[in-house]
Length: 460
Image (cartoon, rainbow, N blue to C red; front, side, top):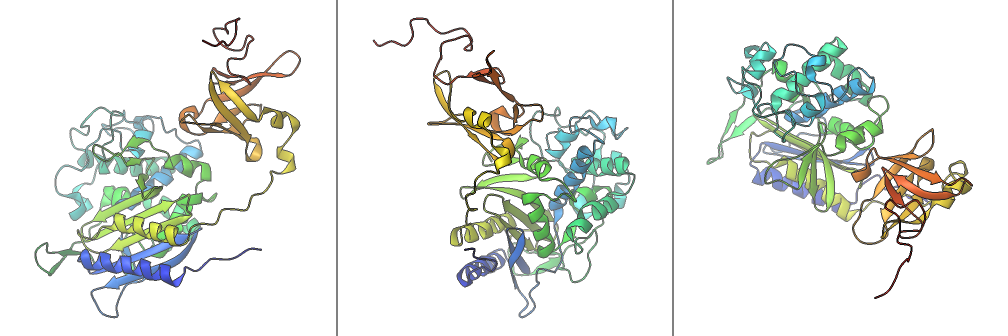
């Protein structure tokens, strides 16, 4: 028997709307929109506004600021997957004459390139992009604050470089590449570079009085790949579903998973967070969230995705400061996860074609020295190696066409795993990047480096 839980329970919906209402009231913002995605579908949205009877909805545009960076990162990853560039390539290989060419593409994606956080001159978020017509105007005479690769330092100009890289390699504008390669395939017709009605206006709220001031809305020019976009809760829900599972029309699941892997610590004093390749990573309420926050004068926004829970929370508001969009988006995920925990997939046996006697014979306990590990089969002839007790290095391994496996995560990511056989065809041991795993702890024979004492185990 199967049961559908597409709609949220009334109690859950009330808790979500209450969280949005508190955010709008305590954040002193003209309006606040929240939304929840579950298993790839938008299952709830709600809003509060200072205008009675005139709250925005999931189709109302807000400016999303640095969430734009995730879109730019996806465009770069597409170029990598097509073989048009490598993440370890220096920028100069594909985009010449910037004065910052030694930085690698991966360092730009993960904000470890050593570049300044902001542009020289006027506050770029609140001034016309016409003031910065060239990359030299964005980077200044001294683009590096520190040596590339040494530490995480968030850089808006770094994403301008990535946007220009996309334009150079693709031969079209960043905006055209974005529309053609991401927005259209994902059905994000309400995500645009300029506002399209219905859209919210951006406001600054006085810190000591309940009065407001309109914020300017500028075309950011070359800085657009760092923060230009306008979007809606519904469109961001579609993007969140993509970040959770990938989409072959845009980026394969394996490449999206690569973006979600930590590439750099978030910075001093914030060890619960990290940064991947264009994605912020956060540990909160015992779960891992991936996504991005965003702000421009008049707007704050955030998208958080819990892949494990199959949930995403979206928060959009139209005030320069006050509303804590990131906290609200995380709370929307938590509320649903706690009130309506995800049902696990039914257990099913592996397909017969993925199991044979040789694979089954490799399962069970193995010993690295005296450390006990268990090897079990996964889908598509993959294997999982994990400690049987205590702390240790767990890893998943993908089967290779030529035999053996390669590590997918953790300490053993990229490391080769193979079964070493004796002359008679029986398995002697497992070799994992030169580490020897035997069926017995320090099993006698020639497998254990350094040999095993001939007198064997002994008591005191």
